[in-house]
Image (cartoon, rainbow, N blue to C red; front, side):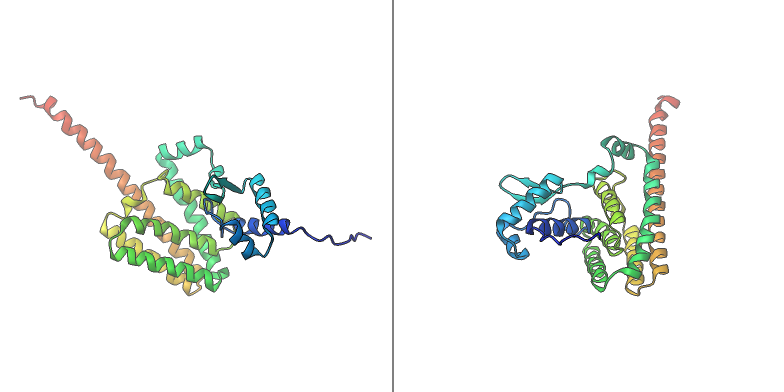
Amino acid sequence: MPFQKIQTEKLSIAVVRQIELLILRGILRPGERLPSERELADRMGVSRPSLRDAIAELQEQGLLTAKAGSGIYVAEVLGSAFSPALIRLFGSHEEAVFDYLSFRRDLEGLAAERAARLGSTSDLKVVQAIFDRMEAAHDRSATQDEAQLDADFHMAIIEASHNVIMLHMMRSMYDLLRQGVFYNRQMMFQQRATREAILDQHRAINQALQQRDPFKSKQAVEKHLSFVETCLYEQQTSKRNDEIAKQRLQHLPMMWPD
């Protein structure tokens, strides 16, 4: 018969599994510092030797890392999604920007649809809380904070979709966006009309999610990212036209010398 005796699981293995799940589900984030050894052992109800064994195992797996005199941190595992050479290509060719936005529109539309259907009450409270903070940053013209909260808002929707593969892929993409690989997000928040439009679009996304309407949520996200795409295209066109105009201006003395 294919039955075996149940083996008592070591406490350290249970700790490893719990921390693995917290990282997998995106609750513990790359670069986040874990509580002190004493506090973490108390919270998890295990001995400090068992906790040390678990931490050592997770460090060996590359999920945690120790910083001398600072503590234990979740490893920066997101950069592995793209090679440095590919990241440089993304940053140096304009077509990558629009492919990136097209990819986001498809994936985030699906995520919003899933979040409206599958997100818990707590998930939607997180989305609402971030939107409220975004609105407050908008009212005080804190463009840098507003740009950061924009990314946090979109990631909260991804998290509420409860798909761990999508979560880590999109988190990796947003990490590149924060680094300015694809475009300068803060420039979009420097024009008041653009800021107003983006806030209205985020409000529409949030309202559709809070109403748990999958179709409207997907539609609102897609409309928002199409707007961002149009804004970037117009910015690039304006920049290119200005460069041409400057070349003409520089050429004028040669056409009509004094």
